[in-house]
Image 1 (spheres, rainbow, N blue to C red):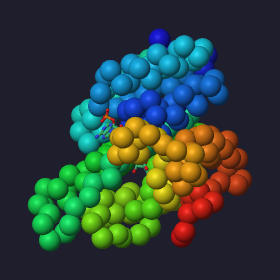
Image 2 (image 1 turned 90 degrees about the vertical axis):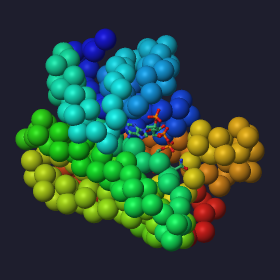
Image 3 (image 1 turned 60 degrees about the horizontal axis):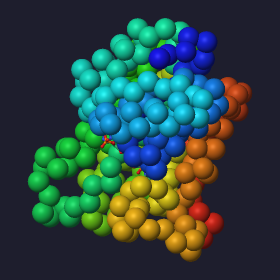
Length: 246
Ligand SMILES: NC(=O)c1ccc[n+]([C@@H]2O[C@H](COP(=O)([O-])OP(=O)(O)OC[C@H]3O[C@@H](n4cnc5c(N)ncnc54)[C@H](OP(=O)(O)O)[C@@H]3O)[C@@H](O)[C@H]2O)c1
């Protein structure tokens, strides 16, 4: 159920409980926001919504494929039709790390990486600007080391993440004056979350944790970006652990 008295947040790209999308959703709910949580898998979204409700918050799950134009339009329509205020805060978090050598790569693999990581960010941003402006809202894009650097074996993903970053810059400059605070967070390293656990037999030692960026640290940063005053906005922030070589 939507709570008409609360400010509203939308997170696009919510999956596992220990993923960044879920952690952000739970954080915004703790801060008193009603959170629309969106991803492709209903049971994962329902699980996150249940966790939020169990800790006294409120959330609405919406299945949406962020690469599909009609699906994104339907998501924003459904939010608009729900009771209460317009969205105050949006996070675009979709973007799977897609490895692959350029010599062997099918062209569709390259365009799929771009669709998932960059084109879907455009679809979300276009709907947000059409529906929320003029007005005050924060739109945060999740970036990665790939947003800034090419790396062997990741040509498709690197090019898509860096394209998303310059798209976010253009958006920030085009709509800042109308009240949209656009931010881009460069996550420069692995996250201590489900993706890492999946690749490492579900285990994470204390020593390994020191080399991974914490979900708590990330959610603090996103929240603080949202709190910034228009007289002192950041466009971009980069985050890494103290032990990262960079
Ligand atoms: N994990 C890392 O180490 C790391 C490091 C640096 C940067 N990042 C960035 O952090 C973000 C993800 O964080 P995370 O790795 O913790 O995972 P996460 O937040 O759980 O991942 C986002 C979720 O988005 C959903 N998703 C994927 N494609 C989608 C689509 N087309 N439409 C709607 N939803 C979609 C997936 O769930 P469903 O499959 O259920 O739809 C996925 O679990 C990405 O932008 C990534 O580039 C991650």
